[in-house]
View 1 (cartoon, helix red, strand yellow):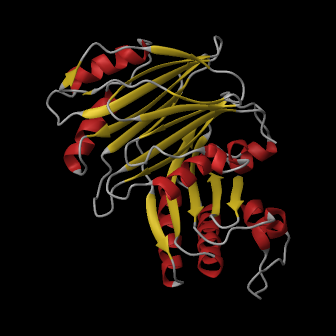
View 2 (cartoon, rainbow, N blue to C red):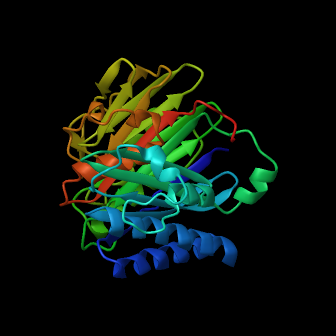
View 3 (tube, helix red, strand yellow):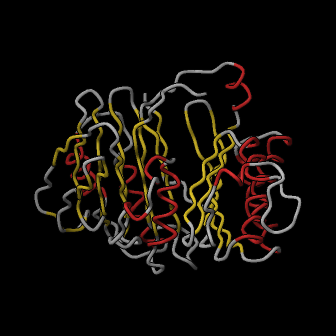
Amino acid sequence: MGTRVHSNEHVRVEVSEMSQVAQARRVATMLAHACGFDEHAAGTVALLATELSTNQVKHAKDGEILLRMVERVHGEGVEILALDRGPGMANVGHAFVDGHSTTGTSGTGLGAISRMASEFDVYSQPGKGTALLARLWKSSEEERREPKLMTSAMTAGLVCLAKTGEEVCGDGWVHDEHADRALYAVVDGLGHGLQAAEASRAAILSLRDDQTIGPAGYIDRAHGMLRSTRGAAMAVAELVHRQAVVKFAGVGNIGAVLVGPQGSRHLVSLNGTVGHQIHRVKEFEYPWPAGTMLIMHSDGIATHWDLHDYPGLTSHHPALVAGILYRDFARGRDDVTVLVVKGMSDRRRN
C-alpha cells in the first residue's frame, strides 16, 4: 500500500497588524488538537504560528499565514507557510543568529524558530519578500530517538485555497506514493463553491484504488463518474521510479511543467471537460532525469511564471516553490491549487 494524501486545503490568515497574530495562533492550536497533539506539542505549534506571524507584522507587508494538516507514514502534523511581499533578506544566515534583530527588539532570530520545528526552510529575495516553511510532526520526538529510512524518493509541497468568500475549495488534488511509482493529480471543478467542490470530489474518488490503469485510464474513469456534476479540468501524472519517466494525461486548463537542469517543458493537456465532453484521452511519456521538478496548478495561477526569476529556489523545499508561485501569480478570482514534486537527494532523515 502507498502513502495517500489528498484534498485537505489550507486555512489562510491575513497578517498586517498584531490583532491578527492571535487568529493565526488559534488556527494553529485547532489543527494541532485535530492531529491529536498533546498540550506541550500543541503549544509549540501555537508558538511557531505566533512567532512567524509576529515577524511579518514587524518586518513585512502584505503578510499571510497558510496552515493545514499534513500526513505521512509515521503520523500527522501541522504545516505553517508564512508568505510576505516585504523587503526580503539579503543575508538569510544573519537572521538565524540568536539575538539578531532589525527592529531594535531583542529578537531570537529564525534559529530559535527552526529549532522548534521538525522541518524548517526559508527563501528570501531582496525587494520581493520572504517565504518560510515550518512543520511539526506528532511523532517527531520518537523519530529523533530512532531515525528511520525515508519511505519515498519523492517530496511534495502544496498550496490549496478556496476563492475569497467561498467556504469550500472547488479544486482537489492527490499525492499517492508507492515503492515503485507515485501518482499525482490536480482537479479543478468548473466554477467555484459547493458544486465545483462536488465535481472535484468525484474526480478524487475515481483515483482511490491501487489498480494501475495509467493516467489516461484514470481520466476515462473519472469522465464516467462526473457525468452528474458540472464537470472538471483534470491532470494526472504517474512517476515510474525504475524507468525514470513520468506518464501524463490532462484535459482542460490544468498547467503542468517539468523544470530541470536542461530547462522547462510544458506537458500536453487536451481541450475538453471531464464529465461532459472529451475526445480520446491521450497519454504522453516524458523523461524524468535527476534534479527534475514537476509543477501542476489549476487556472487560479497565471501561466507566465518563470523560476529563473528566483535564483536558488529550486534547491529549497517544494512547499516554498508552491507558496511563492501562489504569492506572486494567484489571479485572485478563483480557487487556487499548486502541487510541486521533486526527488529527494537524501533518503535518510538527519
